Length: 133
Image (cartoon, rainbow, N blue to C red; front, side, top):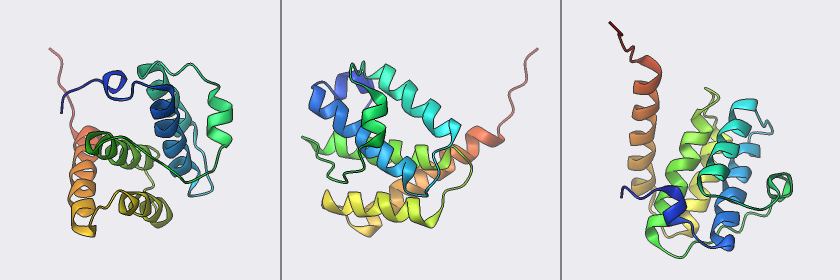
Protein backbone atom coordinates (compact mmCIF):
# COMPACT_ATOMS: atom_id res chain seq x y z
CA UNK A 1 0.00 0.00 0.00
CA UNK A 2 2.37 2.69 -1.22
CA UNK A 3 -0.20 4.88 -2.92
CA UNK A 4 -0.09 8.59 -2.36
CA UNK A 5 -3.08 9.94 -0.45
CA UNK A 6 -4.17 11.92 -3.51
CA UNK A 7 -4.29 8.67 -5.53
CA UNK A 8 -6.37 6.92 -2.89
CA UNK A 9 -8.92 9.67 -2.15
CA UNK A 10 -9.94 10.87 -5.59
CA UNK A 11 -13.52 12.15 -5.53
CA UNK A 12 -14.67 15.24 -3.66
CA UNK A 13 -16.86 13.03 -1.46
CA UNK A 14 -13.93 10.77 -0.52
CA UNK A 15 -11.70 13.73 0.28
CA UNK A 16 -14.36 15.44 2.35
CA UNK A 17 -15.19 12.24 4.24
CA UNK A 18 -11.50 11.67 4.97
CA UNK A 19 -10.96 15.20 6.28
CA UNK A 20 -14.28 15.28 8.13
CA UNK A 21 -13.38 12.03 9.89
CA UNK A 22 -9.95 13.32 10.86
CA UNK A 23 -11.55 16.51 12.13
CA UNK A 24 -13.90 14.47 14.33
CA UNK A 25 -10.84 12.72 15.80
CA UNK A 26 -8.98 16.01 16.33
CA UNK A 27 -11.94 17.46 18.23
CA UNK A 28 -12.83 14.30 20.18
CA UNK A 29 -10.69 15.30 23.18
CA UNK A 30 -12.28 18.79 23.20
CA UNK A 31 -8.97 20.27 22.11
CA UNK A 32 -7.87 21.17 18.60
CA UNK A 33 -4.14 21.79 18.89
CA UNK A 34 -2.02 23.74 16.46
CA UNK A 35 -0.11 20.55 15.58
CA UNK A 36 -3.39 18.82 14.72
CA UNK A 37 -4.51 21.78 12.60
CA UNK A 38 -1.14 21.84 10.81
CA UNK A 39 -1.28 18.10 10.05
CA UNK A 40 -4.87 18.37 8.75
CA UNK A 41 -3.92 21.31 6.54
CA UNK A 42 -0.96 19.34 5.19
CA UNK A 43 -3.16 16.31 4.49
CA UNK A 44 -5.73 18.53 2.76
CA UNK A 45 -2.98 19.88 0.54
CA UNK A 46 -1.65 16.38 -0.18
CA UNK A 47 -5.05 15.14 -1.35
CA UNK A 48 -5.62 18.36 -3.30
CA UNK A 49 -8.79 19.24 -1.36
CA UNK A 50 -10.51 22.22 -2.96
CA UNK A 51 -13.22 22.84 -0.34
CA UNK A 52 -13.31 25.13 2.67
CA UNK A 53 -11.37 23.49 5.50
CA UNK A 54 -13.05 25.64 8.14
CA UNK A 55 -16.46 24.26 7.13
CA UNK A 56 -15.07 20.72 7.08
CA UNK A 57 -13.49 21.18 10.52
CA UNK A 58 -16.77 22.47 11.97
CA UNK A 59 -18.79 19.54 10.63
CA UNK A 60 -19.02 17.20 13.65
CA UNK A 61 -21.11 14.53 11.90
CA UNK A 62 -19.65 11.12 12.65
CA UNK A 63 -20.81 9.32 9.50
CA UNK A 64 -17.53 8.40 7.84
CA UNK A 65 -17.96 6.37 4.63
CA UNK A 66 -15.30 5.05 2.28
CA UNK A 67 -15.51 2.95 -0.87
CA UNK A 68 -12.96 0.28 -0.03
CA UNK A 69 -10.87 -1.42 2.66
CA UNK A 70 -7.69 0.39 1.66
CA UNK A 71 -9.28 3.80 2.27
CA UNK A 72 -10.60 2.59 5.63
CA UNK A 73 -7.18 1.32 6.74
CA UNK A 74 -5.43 4.52 5.67
CA UNK A 75 -8.08 6.55 7.49
CA UNK A 76 -7.56 4.60 10.74
CA UNK A 77 -3.76 4.91 10.43
CA UNK A 78 -3.96 8.65 9.80
CA UNK A 79 -6.45 9.04 12.67
CA UNK A 80 -4.06 7.39 15.11
CA UNK A 81 -1.18 9.46 13.72
CA UNK A 82 -3.25 12.60 14.20
CA UNK A 83 -4.18 11.63 17.77
CA UNK A 84 -0.52 11.01 18.60
CA UNK A 85 0.81 14.24 17.08
CA UNK A 86 0.16 16.42 20.13
CA UNK A 87 1.81 13.88 22.45
CA UNK A 88 -1.43 13.05 24.23
CA UNK A 89 -3.25 10.03 22.80
CA UNK A 90 -6.15 10.09 25.22
CA UNK A 91 -8.82 7.47 25.82
CA UNK A 92 -11.52 9.63 24.20
CA UNK A 93 -9.53 9.83 20.95
CA UNK A 94 -8.87 6.10 21.05
CA UNK A 95 -12.55 5.32 21.67
CA UNK A 96 -13.66 7.57 18.82
CA UNK A 97 -11.22 5.99 16.36
CA UNK A 98 -12.19 2.49 17.50
CA UNK A 99 -15.92 3.23 17.15
CA UNK A 100 -15.38 4.43 13.58
CA UNK A 101 -13.26 1.34 12.85
CA UNK A 102 -16.09 -0.83 14.19
CA UNK A 103 -18.46 0.75 11.67
CA UNK A 104 -16.02 -0.56 9.04
CA UNK A 105 -16.48 -4.06 10.47
CA UNK A 106 -13.13 -4.14 12.25
CA UNK A 107 -12.51 -6.39 15.25
CA UNK A 108 -10.85 -5.05 18.37
CA UNK A 109 -7.78 -7.22 17.64
CA UNK A 110 -7.39 -5.79 14.11
CA UNK A 111 -7.66 -2.27 15.52
CA UNK A 112 -5.20 -3.01 18.35
CA UNK A 113 -2.59 -4.39 15.95
CA UNK A 114 -2.76 -1.32 13.73
CA UNK A 115 -2.78 0.99 16.75
CA UNK A 116 0.32 -0.69 18.19
CA UNK A 117 2.10 -0.40 14.84
CA UNK A 118 1.32 3.33 14.62
CA UNK A 119 2.37 3.97 18.23
CA UNK A 120 5.72 2.24 17.61
CA UNK A 121 6.28 4.31 14.49
CA UNK A 122 5.49 7.52 16.37
CA UNK A 123 7.83 6.51 19.19
CA UNK A 124 10.63 5.77 16.74
CA UNK A 125 10.16 9.08 14.96
CA UNK A 126 10.33 11.00 18.23
CA UNK A 127 13.29 9.08 19.69
CA UNK A 128 15.68 8.45 16.82
CA UNK A 129 18.39 11.02 16.39
CA UNK A 130 20.05 11.34 13.04
CA UNK A 131 23.71 12.26 13.06
CA UNK A 132 24.86 14.49 10.24
CA UNK A 133 28.53 14.56 9.40
